[in-house]
Each structure stands twice: as structure tokens, then as C-alpha cells.
Length: 268
Image (cartoon, rainbow, N blue to C red):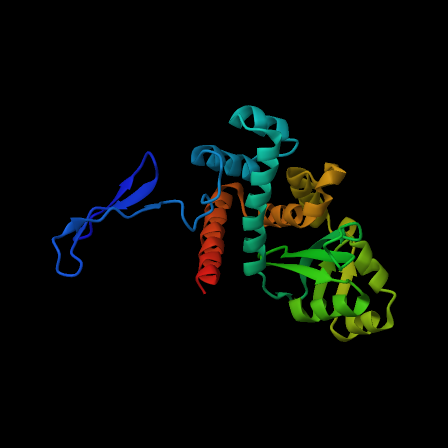
């Protein structure tokens, strides 16, 4: 009989089985383990309910929200920044895992970018990264790609891998604009029938981009947050992909998958 019991106040499992070793008299097992092990909450230094509320506010409240989070949750600015960043790591995992090839049949996909300049970060040998978020406007299928050294050849390889022929790509990404002057890139657009258009040309897309961008607040982001642009772009895609009622559900599915994977890697 399984006599593993959960202390709901301390969130700890404790074994109450009686076991005998080396034919000696049975003794009560006293092994205990935290219920937070191998979960999103394992390393949380704040109350689990406070963190839950922070996640809910992050997914549903539009910026500016830092002052609201500090006042509502009663935690420091540093704690808000730390746990928002941890939550965005979960969102990044969801975006990467659910990436799939988009377009075809004259479908429209929206591509938004975050350009990371890492030249001032000593631990990084890469001086530039481009993060692309692609969303199929009708189906909300998506891809999320981090491109090291976004030269035209590297961007071209990404588009061939992630975008079907006969597709309209709605974007105002400066890097992509520059690539359109490249000979190989131009040949690709003709051969694969991939047309790049500005958001202003597609009213539905333009309004949706502005609306979701407003929710993330990336346009008003302080310079100190630039190193976490990938997280903000992932948050943008997550909110563009899922309705408000779906967000919490998909967040915890991603969190469960992310920490289950991390645990498997640590255990070998």
C-alpha cells in the first residue's frame, strides 16, 4: 500500500511506509521530498501563490505594469524582474517547441523581429543575433527562430526551411529589407513565389501587430531590458497566438514540459 502523504501547508511529500532491511525489524520510512521539485516553482524564493499571481498578471495585464506588480504582490522591483524573466523562459520554450513551417497557397504570415547587439557583452563571441517570430495570420501556426549572424545567406536558409513557396510575408524588419537587395535573395523570391509586403499594405495585420505590441509594451521598453528582447518577442508571439482564456493553460503545459526535460538532462 502506498503511504506517501502530502503536507499541503509545507508542500512536502513524506513516506510513511514500514520497511525492513537485512531481515531486521521493520522501521518507519522518513524520506521526504518537496512537491515543488522538478517544477517551475522549485527555485522560487517567493510564495507559490504570489508567483502564480505574478504569472497571471504578466499574461493578462498590459504594460506599464511593474509598479502594479510591486504594489499588488508586495515584492521588490528586483524580484519582479527576476521572476518575469523566468516566466518568459517558459514562454520562449513554448514558442520554440511549437515552431512549424508556415505559408503556402497564397497565405499571409506575419514576421516580427528583435535585433540583439551583443558586442558589449564580454562573454559572447557573437556580436549580433536576429530573433524572428512568424505567425500564420489565419491559423495562428507559428515559428520562433534565433539566427546567429543574420547575413543574407543565413536568412535565406531560414526562409527556405520555415516558409513554404507561394507565400506573402508581412514584415517591416530592416534586416529583411536589406536582404531584398541581395541577388540570391531576389532569385529566391521569384523561384519560390515568396512576396514581402509592408504591414501597412494589410490592414488586418497592421492593427493586430499594434494591438499585441501594446500588450507587451516592447516599443516603450527601457534600454536596460534590451538583453532580454528574445523574451519580450516570445511574449509578443505567445499573446498573438493564444487568446486571454488560453494563455494560462498553455503556459503551464510549457512549464511542465520544460522542467521535465531539464530534469531528464540532469539525471543523464
